[in-house]
Image (cartoon, rainbow, N blue to C red):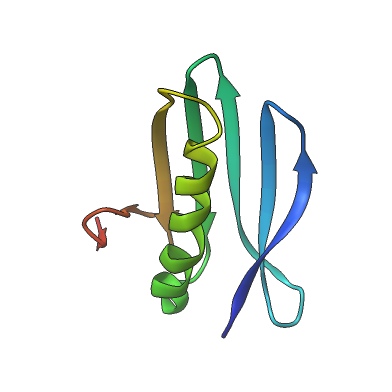
Length: 93
């Protein structure tokens, strides 16, 4: 199953992106909130079967958003099937 980002809500200080499959069915989301020099990223994917695709999709997006402001601190909480993942380690906890 292939997954894609589909914008739901985009403002300068916040974004909500749906994660959809090839049939345009929502299978998760990722949300960004920017406040001063901090960015909070929350995301959830329903199925573990596309966990590598999820990581490959969101990691460069988060890195790109992190470049939007100088000295931006990025806090993330991403989960797949209810289990927290670490993008740096590639682990699902």
